[in-house]
Image 1 (cartoon, rainbow, N blue to C red):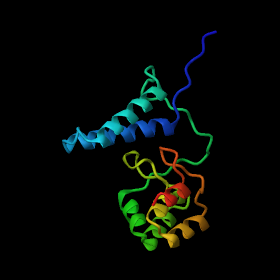
Image 2: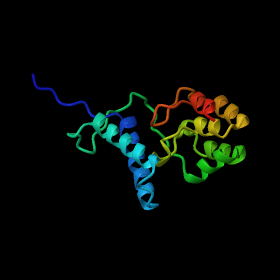
Image 3: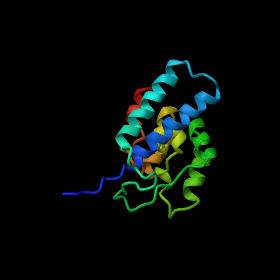
Image 4: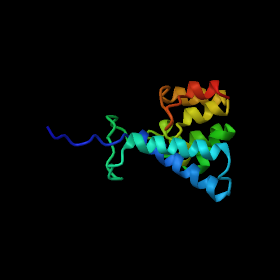
Length: 154
């Protein structure tokens, strides 16, 4: 029986892209002898192995979630990092048709959900607001970290 290979998930691709971007950043800073660089290279190789050498670079496994994932602009990532509730709330309410409360950061920052970013910054007021607006408590980064695990690691 011949079966087509199952394409990688979006999370798998995001993880690989995150490692690739971090590796490039370290190389640009000429810090290729550090342990962090070595660990990043290992992570990149593991991510590539999970995806498989025969991946076409385009096809990814579709999520069963009906809503399209919203990417946060950089100024919102910074606003969440500062705990700037007013700016974040204004952005979330600017387009009610999008699921902005569950928006994620870009791949270079591990596709981190807004609630996890607020959790990392220990911004309890912002976390409470995001939860009241329907933020997904189980939303994960590209490495599988949840808002709760992010809070515990701070």
